[in-house]
Image 1 (cartoon, rainbow, N blue to C red):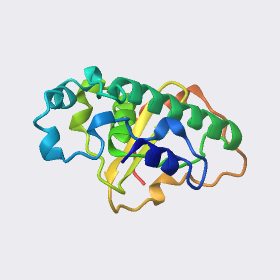
Image 2 (cartoon, one colour; image 1 turned 90 degrees about the vertical axis):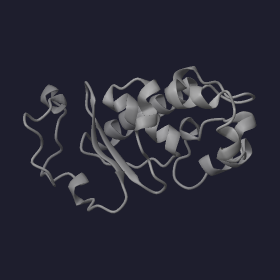
Image 3 (cartoon, rainbow, N blue to C red; image 1 turned 60 degrees about the horizontal axis):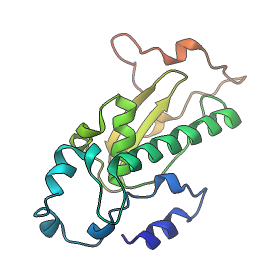
Length: 173
């Protein structure tokens, strides 16, 4: 998608967030994958994306940093306004989503090509005071009711234990 179209898409409905627009692929934008696979940059993008800088575009590491910063900023804002059980949605593109997931998992950007984010799939991450938890990845049709927190009589306070992992896994939902 050309840069101007990416920016127009980012200003759509809801709250536009420039930090979540697709990576600036520069001279790669609009080119067929068959052609790009022959480019000397292709193996770098596939095996060492943290070193990839697209000619006339953006560094993959810069895209990852801005996306992670944007998601964490939005999460802090929504949590401050609506409490720790608030559920919110961000829409973006595959490489942006994979970069945010890699960060949530504590995985180096050079491993993010192992993550799959299909078009229109859902990925859910819960951010806590000390670390994020990946709740869903590349979900293309599952029941979403487990992502809605239980109703409470009074708002829940954030506690240190909210960042603890459940021993043996979660009960599910």
